[in-house]
Image: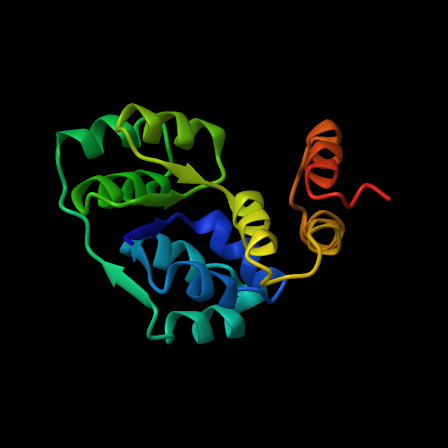
Length: 163
């Protein structure tokens, strides 16, 4: 399975100390150079990011510049743009991306996408984590991850954690 990731899902998993879920779920994750650069600019998680980038299951690839790059870049940041194009160039099975605008572009390129919440739900379904709620709460309360209240409640209900 070919999986390409944007910055946000990686940043979230790094923040809560759960990057191993990516290896357990997907075996390997490919990121474009722009995502690597965006991660390296996050000084508060510098040690954790350095550790992640040294893992054998993370691969950094260069993206071929194209007319599509110029078009997409007008609407999205560099990491999102390169992640979409790399996923397209590699004929990826899955693109990890949180931003709704980026996911809309991915859909136009016929790419299947999954966000950080989707990764956590998949991890719970595969019995890799016991609960989603404590991780969502940590993301929101300690790391500034925003989840609409109705969506939060729906997520908890869907995994029967709405106690």
